Image (cartoon, rainbow, N blue to C red; front, side):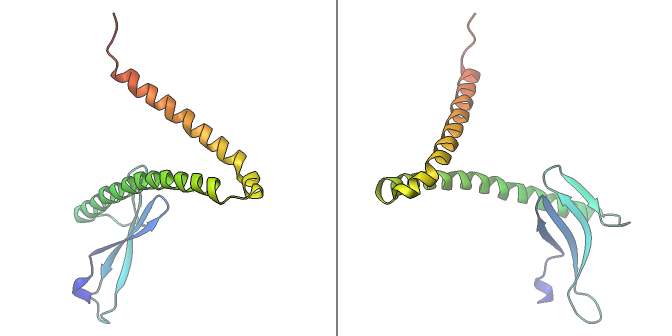
Length: 138
């Protein structure tokens, strides 16, 4: 099993990860994980743990992980939006076919406000994009 383990382990945190170097080359042949850094995916900050100096190999691995992680998070963001569209459609079907008056009383105002807010932002953003693409008059 030791040969299959990566050299680094990233414990995901809210805005990044704690970075560990994995060591299996010890006398007890146990897996040891030594925390070497903390990374913040939002601002790109890499903080060495304690008085530790990160090697070029450490930094290369951390930067590579951060790039891959940002790609995963970006894909999740758009996937979440596609799911939201699905939920809106399912909600419409529920309202039309299954919802009781009491259930509708519970959710109607919140749904209408959220949908109004979303529609306003979408219309404004679309207008901004159209204005960027419009030829200059002059």
